Structure formats: C-alpha cells, structure tokens
Amino acid sequence: MFWRLISYRVPDIFESMATDEAILLDTVRNKKPPTIRFYGTNPAAVSIGYFQDMEQDIAVEKCRKEGIDIVRRATGGRAVFHLNEITYCVVAPEGEKIFPKDIAGTYKVINGCIARGLGYLGVKAHLAESTWSAPSKNINPCCFAAPAKNELLVDGKKICGSAQMRKRDGFLQHGTLLVSFDARRTASLLLRHFTPKEANELKSSTTSLDEHLKELPDIQHVCEKLKYGFINELGIKLKEDKLTASEEKLKNDLVKKYTSANWNMEKKRKPDKTER
Image (cartoon, rainbow, N blue to C red; front, side):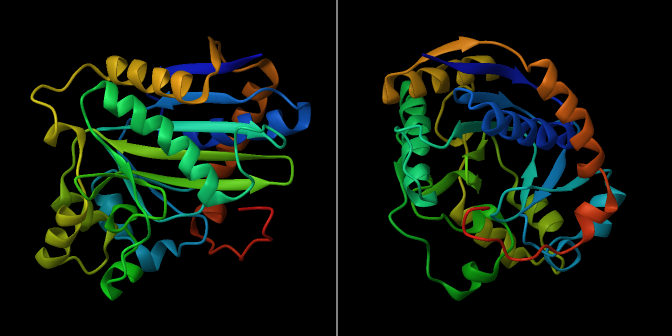
C-alpha cells in the first residue's frame, strides 16, 4: 500500500493549518492511508500552541505592526516564528502499526525519518533524550527554547520543533525544520518583554541548516532528501498526489476557523488524553 506525498508549496499560515486538519479529519473518517506533506509559509507568520495564551505569551502588537500573521494551531507545543523554514506534516489513521500510540513514541519514529533525511544532506542529527531543566527554559513560550523528548538536535542544539494532535482514530504531527534562524528577531516577536539576554539564550539553544552546510541547497532538494528519509527509515512507498475534493472542501471551511478572532484569541481548555 502506498502512502500519499503532497509536495512542497508555500501558502499562508491559515491555509496550511486548515490543510493539515482537513487531511486528519478526512483520514480518520474514511480510514485512508497516511499522508506526508511539506510546506513553507508566506507571508511570515507566528503560530502558537493550542493551549497558549496569545496575549500573554507573544508580542501581539509588534507582530501586527510588522504585518506578521498570527494563528493558533490545533496541535500543542509552543510558539514558532515561520520564516526560512520547511514544515513537515504527517497524518496517519489509528492502527498504523509503524507508529506507537503515545506522543513521545511517535516523535521518535517521525524524527528518526527527518534525521535520516538530514543525514543525506551531510547534517548529523540526534534525538533529545530529555527536556532541559533550567527554570527559564521551562517558562519560555518559544518552541526552540528547549527540546521535548525525541525532538531533533544537531550539536546539542534544537533544529526541528514538532507538535501533535491525537484523536481516537488517528493523529496529526507537524514540525518546523529551520533553514536559517534570526534569534533576535524571533525573540522580539515571541517574547512580550524581550531582552538581549533572552535572544542570546534562544541563540544558544537553537541551530539551523545554514550553520552546518557550506552552501544551502534548493528547498526542493532538501524536501527530496527528507522524503527518502521517510522511505528508507520506514520501508514505505510514496505516491505523489494532491488533496481530494472532500479535503479541499474541509480546508476551505477550516480556513474560516483559523482566521477568526474567536479561535485565535480564546485560551483553550485542557484536553482529554485522546485529543492531543
């Protein structure tokens, strides 16, 4: 059985979040095979985790003044500034034996695929054994301030941050692989009370592809290597395809949610274990 591959494109952040959720909903309803897709973000945007408090956790007014889109993800985790990065998305139905039924186990499998793909580029990545314990890291709202268990590190620094949503009949995991990284600008957008010290802390915990490659390859080339990371790590076959008509309809409906102030500004309740 083939898994579906949706090739790299660069929509805005609202369409991307709607697309990821549409794929999940359609997959669990119709018990479809897994999907892998890659995408970028244009214009630049900030996404926050499902349970974050937008007004408390990020510099909302600064983002607005700079024309930075802001969206609340359906997945957990912390805030990400989407610029000069590649985002992957993996959706699978319940019962797909390759994936464990817990978040950390699924992280390990998927990030193992990303690590193999990075290896094909000459970048040696490894999985984080545990999260950092410094108190300032624990409260930092930035995704790249600290790794979760089984997230990807290069030379001890986080290069890819992931988040997940689990339903009873399947899961969605997406993550951001940094191509380049501006710690000062990121900190100024994601921290309400930004200081140079916090920017330096973020820089010390984060890395990106441009720091490990003499010359950055084309984004499509990076995606190709990541694709083969999944193929060879999991022993799967991929068939390139696009969204189905039902997914397109779901996506268009969900864009309305992701662009609404009600969704983005309202702090969310804690979930049942089967939800996220």
